[in-house]
Image (cartoon, rainbow, N blue to C red; front, side, top):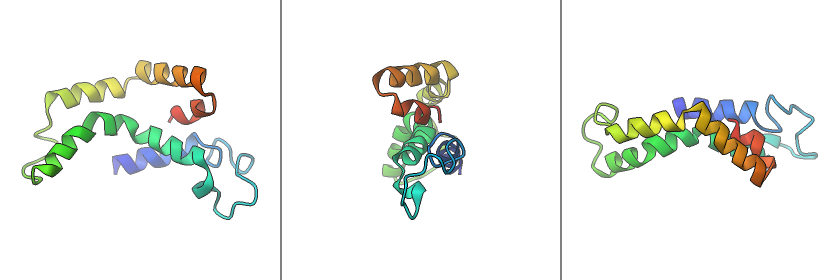
Length: 112
C-alpha cells in the first residue's frame, strides 16, 4: 500500500493534470487526461523510485527464493542503508537539481 500511496501522491501533487496543474495543464481534447499525460506517470514513478531502489533487489531475491520467511524481518542491512539514502531530502534535492539542469520538464515530476 505504501507504493500505491506514493504513486498517487506523486501523480496528484507533481503532474500537470493533478492538483498542481488542475484543468489548466490537462491536454486538450483528451477524454481521460490523466492516462494520456506523461507527467502523471513520470511523477508516479518518481514517487515510488526510492522504495524500488532500496528494496527492489531484495524483494526480487526473496521472490525468486520461493518467498519463504518474512521479507521485512529478513531484510539485509544494506537495504536499510539504501532506504535511508534514497529517502534523504538532500539526495532528493540533488537529483531534482540535476534534472532541472538536464531537462527542465522533469523537474516538477522529480519532486514527487
